[in-house]
Image 1 (cartoon, rainbow, N blue to C red):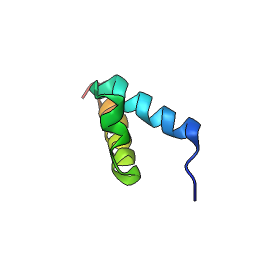
Image 2 (cartoon, helix red, strand yellow):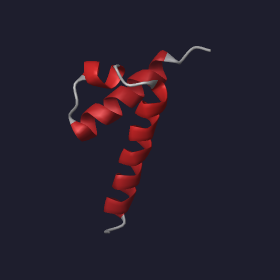
Image 3 (cartoon, helix red, strand yellow):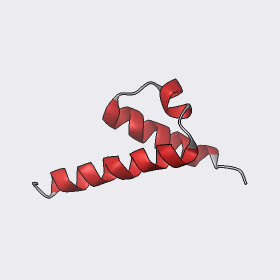
Length: 52
């Protein structure tokens, strides 16, 4: 199974933008771990937007 390059770029950009991590650090994460960070950032953003 291959991972779509555009999806990978989207995940890297998302994590880098919100956590200011370096691209190499994000790419070093296992796919599953990177997805967990994406979900956590989304959760944080949702809570912030709801005023919590």
